[in-house]
Length: 353
Image (tube, rainbow, N blue to C red):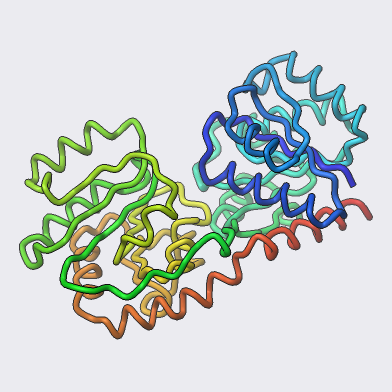
C-alpha cells in the first residue's frame, strides 16, 4: 500500500515529529510504502529525506494554490498512491480539495492534533470529506462530533514518543530544585500561570530555578513579566532546545496549558525520563494523567493550586518516587510501535473497504 503523508508546516514541532515517526515506522514494516509532501522550506522534508523517505516538494504551503493541486495530482498518479494522510489544518484543506475535485481514486485520512474550535464552513467541510479522522485525544474527537462530523468517522490514536531516545534521570541530590516548562512561548501554554505560581512559591521556598524551553511571539512580554514580579534571577529563558537536552537537569516538569492541548508529548517525555510531572486539568491532559498516580493535576489557570503542587513534590520524595515509577510504566502505551500499529489497522480497514 502506498501512502502519501501531507504536512504544510514550516516548523519542526510535535506534529511534524509524529509524521516522521509514523513514516519511518511504516517504512520499516515493509507493509506500506510511505511518501511525504511538504513545502521546500519545511525542516520535516529534510529530516524525512535523511531517513530515506521519498518526498515531493510543494511550491507553497497554501491549500488553494493551483500549483500544489497540479503537483499533488501528478504525484498521486505516478506513484499509484492509495491513501492521502494529512497532518495539519492547512494540509487537511489541500488534501480534501484535491481528493474531492481531482482524485476520487484515493482514500483520504486526516489526523487532527489540536483542540481549537473550527472557525468556518470550510474548516468543518474539509474534515467531513475525509473517510477517517484520527484525533489524538478523546477531547478532540468530542469536539469534532460537536460540529456534526459522524461519530463513525472518528478514531482516537494518541501521539507517540520514541521511548528509546530517553534516559531515566538520576535521583536528585542536594536542595536545589530545577523546575521546567517545555513548549512554545504562546498564550495557550500557560506561562503566565506558571510564573504567578513561582511568585507564590518563592515566599515559602526560594531555592529553585525555573528553566523555560521554547521560542515564540510572547518572549518579550514574558521576560517583562518575570522582571516585574522579581524573579529574573530564578527564571532562565533557554530558547528552543531538544527536550532530551534539558530533561535530565529537571526535578519537576510543569504543563500549565490553558487551551489547545492534544496529546502532550512533554508529559510522556517526563514519564520516560522519570521526572515528576504536574499538569493543568484540561480534558486532554486528564486522558493521560491520573492525579496522585502518575502525576499531579491542578485546576486550569489556578496559580495557587499549581504552587501547592510544586511544594508537595519538593517536600514528599515518596510521592515523587510513586508517580515517576507509575509514569515509567504508563509511557509504554505511547510507543511509536503502538501508535504505528493502530494506524496500520485503520489503513487495513480502508483498503478492505
